[in-house]
Image (cartoon, rainbow, N blue to C red; front, top):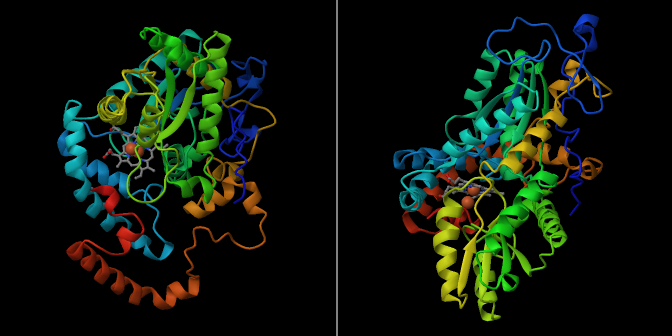
Length: 473
Ligand SMILES: C=CC1=C(C)c2cc3[nH]c(cc4nc(cc5[nH]c(cc1n2)c(C)c5CCC(=O)O)C(CCC(=O)O)=C4C)c(C)c3C=C
Ligand SMILES: [Fe+2]
Ligand SMILES: [Fe+2]
């Protein structure tokens, strides 16, 4: 497997950044302003007819927060799940069977809905994600204005309201001229930020206004000092609730992804997660906190292998080894959601207590912690598109947000080493050639439909074998 060369120390990954989406010729000398960048770099903008959006010089600054979205009521659960499973970055079908993506999503979402509904019912009848993300957007806006960047902040969810498309429409209506795209996931994964960016790319590609808007994407930000400090603050605070705080095992529980994402598709998620944990522990050590710690991956579904070690198995092992106090730290996500409120607080806590762990604690998600949001504001300011060596032509900008095309092409473009390979990478090819697809397409379609019917009636078949169906019960 080729290593994914994600330059995680950089805030702006040039592969995600358009720099400028306007040519220099669009700028009059008069509109050049010294502006924002700590380096004193010049920022220019095209004079526009401004209406209600904040203005810096001639610019209207926007920040687009990308997040997953969650069902707000129990009625929303099944259609929310449909949107999730219809995403090829979540359920990856062989190329030949892509036409089944939506029927399969419908099928799986209906199967999964009762279990999911139970979970959402137990946390108050819906996901708190929209409310918390809106509050984060409001706070971010406040910090940006305090730091003299009068920006508008938008929320674009991947699978539920307010959808990314709605946010983009508002951005256009507001006449935003500079946009910073900020996924609310600290670490990059194909299944989260990658999926949202791929959607955004397809929206940008189709739209003349957006092609001409300057934008920068911050692909991941787990390494930022403010985020690390904010996480360390929360851990330090929770540790104090234990009687013998130095004996507490700090248990980082990250959301899992299927192992193949990392090992075959080059997802940088695991590497970023491990580095993130190291950075938090280094920060704690500076504060003379030297507790034992471990990292495990939660929320695995189905028989396919996900990133290991698994949270549930690790909890049992720790209990067997005689660990008595555990502090769970959710680390993939900055809001409370079903997997913190239900999976960690109820299921894993119960498992821990059964496994011999006597004292249990959980660090809250960051939410609107001022150190954290203030740092996000700094990240935005540092990432604002500005004039400089990054100037690119409109043509280049069309390809710049995320690489265009299918998942394979996207991943191939993420991985520079893979692009250099002489032959196309076959990892996700599943052994079908283009001509075979053409010749066998109709026959295969028929066969698949027959198999699908058999699968449903017998409870066994190819979807179970791929680990697709049993996941969602
Ligand atoms: C089956 C594939 C899934 C992958 C891969 C996955 C990755 C992933 N997810 C999050 C964060 C969230 N996931 C949420 C909901 C959710 N995710 C999946 C499946 C996968 N996630 C399902 C089926 C659901 C629906 C809930 C359920 O039925 O269990 C949410 C929203 C939670 C809420 O409160 O609404 C979040 C957040 C991350 C960070 C991640 C990979 C890194
Ligand atoms: Fe998820
Ligand atoms: Fe999940």
